[in-house]
Image 1 (cartoon, helix red, strand yellow):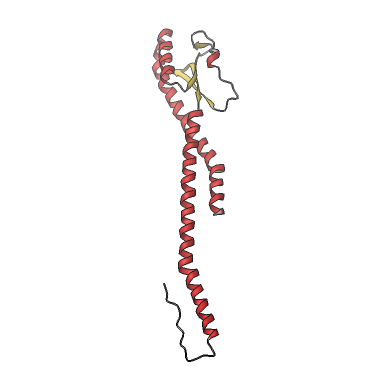
Image 2: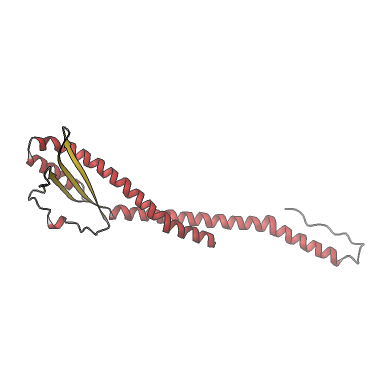
Length: 192
């Protein structure tokens, strides 16, 4: 049973963080791909200098994605185009030490020329909480399965090894005890 507990502890301490790291990495790659789609949606408007259409598209995207904490569009010189004021609103400023937030930046290009960059800050707290919840459920399942396996193995060993060995030991003891009385025949215990 100690083996099951140690295996569960190893799983929780070593495997769960790697699982979270892998899932975050995959999510960041997906976000990068999503930013490429956003880039495709706004590049034509940027090239035509239609800033109102760019802002409307980005506002709509932020509205549809509440976990996107901050979306900043800069032109080729680094000047902030979006949000509209040119400054990141205080309500959307993310502390750089916040471990739940990740930032993805995409360099935007058109006709081989850099036209700006798009930076997204994403809140991973919900994603990480879900991953931890699934990992805990998997851990409980694995511990139960391993515990059941240990219990079944112990019962099988008890029934097929220890019990026959005990009966054989008892029969041998009877044989030794009854050596003086040789008229009585002794039988070995039945094999189960």
